[in-house]
Length: 330
Image 1 (cartoon, rainbow, N blue to C red):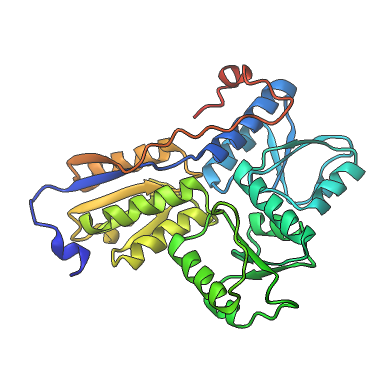
Image 2: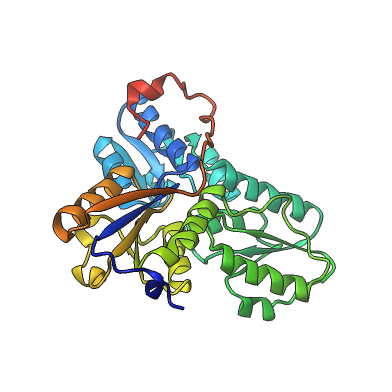
């Protein structure tokens, strides 16, 4: 039975606000790093790539004095540069060293875990299958750890085309922000083709990505549409849309309430709202206000599927006492 058919018509338009939602520990840490460095050293502070994939966050930090660059060649020799939460390849680190840049590494610890797995498997002469999306910043960095040993796959069809030197020495790792369902299918096909394939000690998909997807899957039968706050280049946000669509419920990704289209809500009595792991909470609250004021949703019910209490320590050299002073916590 379609999800919408299971919802009784009560006449009361309702918002289901999912929790957990929004910032994960890695995003909080990365944004904190930029704000603390700006407070400690002043502007400009150079940041390689977007610190996290959210347009509003990038604009706010740019206005505070962060300078976002694509290549290290754009950074003056000897200047200070922050690596984004998505991580970088060894080649980028070597370039920074050669140009005598002062590096502050905001790579998410869960991404670092995947890099270390790639290094470990490469040292044991495994062919490494990296499950991920081509050209995503995180994937580009991970591929750089062992480029001669690593093959990127994006689908089960890619698995069918794989050719490896030794089928008995194959391992897989994954991008941290993938869809659980999508990854499961690819891993199952890999196991069929390579029965002796090695896996990470613990899954690579990050806890926040998993929790937000599980929450969407759980609430899908209770709503007629899902709104995901997040930017178009946010992989984990796009996966939330896909998870809901796969459950048969229309889902839409929007940067903020200004992108909300009235036709998305036609006939929708119950709408669910969540946010990708790099979307600020104030954008969620503005969307709730818009749904209430403009579209007549009179009831907001917060549904908490799982409590999150993960925290990551700051990179070496940054004083945690500056968090309050810098106003880094969001």
